[in-house]
Image (cartoon, rainbow, N blue to C red; front, side):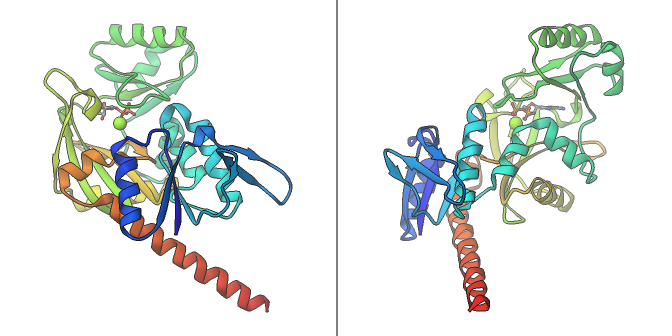
Length: 305
Ligand code: ADP
Ligand code: MG
């Protein structure tokens, strides 16, 4: 197979591991900086170019799209889809998961456990918004934040309303969320591939911090998850339409609640915490999907003839 890994930085652990896993299985794999790709959108013949050459001989692409470049990244993935080239995760799933509000809305209507979450643009009643999510302490999040940046814990109602006002003054879109205190600064990352949790780790915040992100100094370790957590993770990935996803869950008193679903989950933390070859599993899944696609196309062709 010809595989393109859509990544901005070839030195990243995840990018390198995917490249290695693809090559070791005998595939031709290249790293493509998707921001340098350009495309033509013309009737019947969508094309995509990189370094002056048309990229049309790919069998599959693996998107590794960073949060700050999701708009262009999703457009590149969509273009590959228009060219009938398989993408590990579909552009629509990537776009949904990047928007915390959009994904929580989709998960809520399917009955997935969530922290009570409020969303507002310019509420005339900030106090009512705070009351809606159960009062202080509460968590305030920038809608498009990542790696823990833009996630604030407001301990009191006064702190909450000042932070909400400040974010609103900056015209930032924010979520206001029930604080799951009993999680004690820990969350669970479930790595889902093709409808199964293939690995799970607990991430714990460093002392004095409530955000467990590894980028914020959190540490990770292997953990055994419950059947309910497992099914919550699998269902969340399915609802958002993601074949590969990192589903982040908090252990609340009333059961697992999903915080967010990541469509380009990092491999370093999870591979190191669990000792599993996740990159290899991703390539195995791609092989299986391509084969199914080829068999389906062959059948279609046979029916036409
Ligand atoms: P990001 O996309 O920046 O990672 P998250 O929503 O995942 O933002 O929040 C970052 C971290 O903050 C989480 O990993 C978790 O440890 C903590 N956190 C977020 N929301 C809550 C909440 N409602 N209750 C308790 N802790 C939370
Ligand atoms: Mg997170």
